[in-house]
Image (tube, rainbow, N blue to C red; front, top):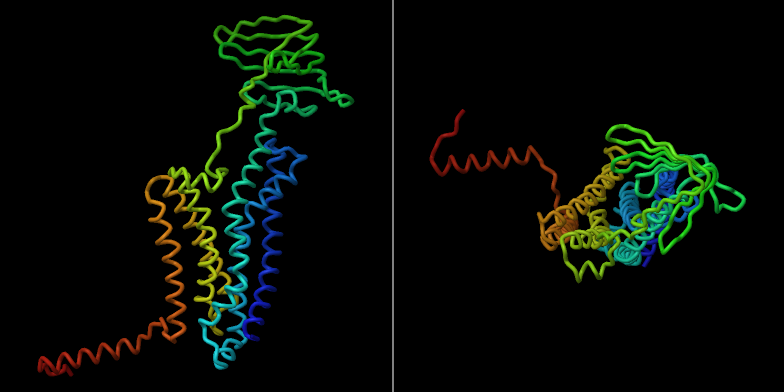
Length: 381
């Protein structure tokens, strides 16, 4: 059918252009954020592209949802603005007939958004956290870049090492400051390297000096050594416990704690929001020739932001125990779907929500006159 094919074709063009624009904007913002994290030592500079790719993959469902919503609003607004909607309606098409071509175009995107929210999002977030944790919890000697002061993994030591770039196995001109419970030690050595002894990692220093400063009486003790060793804290390499964001969806369902139910409501809510926003776009897309251009685009962005914030706020409420899982999902998503369907039905039958002051005053005068006739009260002059 010409009506459905032309609508799907225009939706595809608008959706593709919107995706390209949003991906470019989000990718640029993520690149700036990731480079800032790399400069502060939170991300390995050589893994910036991996972190950026995983982060982009995790936010792809939000980009697709917003692109589908904006494409639907812009396409329908153009049809109204160019009076093409009048042609379709006078040709026998009804407003409710737009639902079928919209769903036939959007159902693969909706399935992809749901799949990204349920499976890809926790996996990509887990990969990103693993990259950051592995770089953050690397060995003390490996943490130090040549010519830079750097804290150790446990935060109790500060290192300065000039690495031997030829072999990259031994550090030269090592400087270390360690804060302990009752003293502070300052150690310097010509060379140093890491050795593994009895499944524990030790920093071996050679030909240096050690200064101990007591925190109680501020006394100092100076000593020289040919060989000195200090153990590297192995707790820094312990794996962090899993969080709700990285937990698989099936585990969220089988272990319904508050945090798990909150995360599950967010993942399912992102998929439901894509479908509801498409219905809302069809129900609200109507152009007034006297209104400012771009008003519907701004309205669409406002509706999208409010809906997304409600999904995030609902997750927080479930985690805090203020609402149950179904107490949030049914009123928010099913309620908005029914509201959008009701608005679409009222527009389909030609009902208007505009308030006419003149008609209201005339109706009030009519009711007042009938009341005066029934009570035999003469009207006031």
